[in-house]
Figure 1: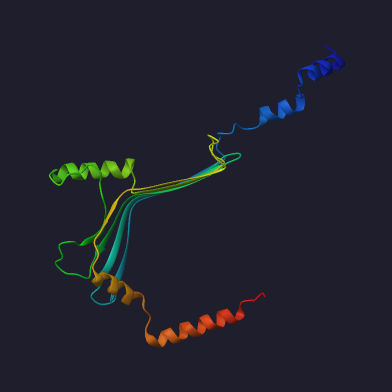
Figure 2 (figure 1 turned 90 degrees about the vertical axis):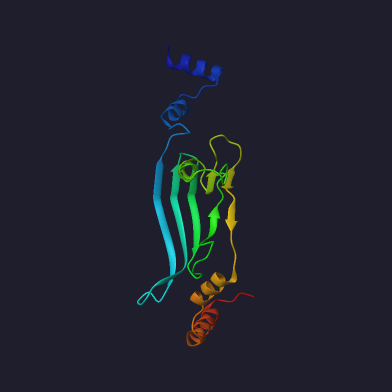
Length: 197
């Protein structure tokens, strides 16, 4: 076949050889460019009074199975974060019936279940059904939208009493002498900001 005959055939078929070659060299839409994954099995954060003396927890937060994922594709990306379990413990009230003031409600658990059944169910739930799951997708592969946001959260039980709220407020409240310094610093920052009218 001569070049002229090939050109006539391509014109009849509406075929562009250069664009077909470029498309064949492009990666498929679902191929991965970058994938980053991070996982933390267990973590905690505690507010303590008198850390250099007899340290006592004011409040502590405990979480498990924290995961973060990021996937970049040729024309899209998605990012997700999940938290398997979550609990907050009160350290201000001694001999309380409810030391855990925030806990995740486990679906399908009955108070009559044995302790081993509850522990086994909790470990399976934290892997399969996390307490909190957030996922953002830009230009998803299934083309359901330009951007997609998925958010799932299980039920929580929160026990409130004013003792731990006041203790946390006291922990973060600066002394009166430092309060004046902070106020002066904020006034100076506002003065330095450019004002547009």
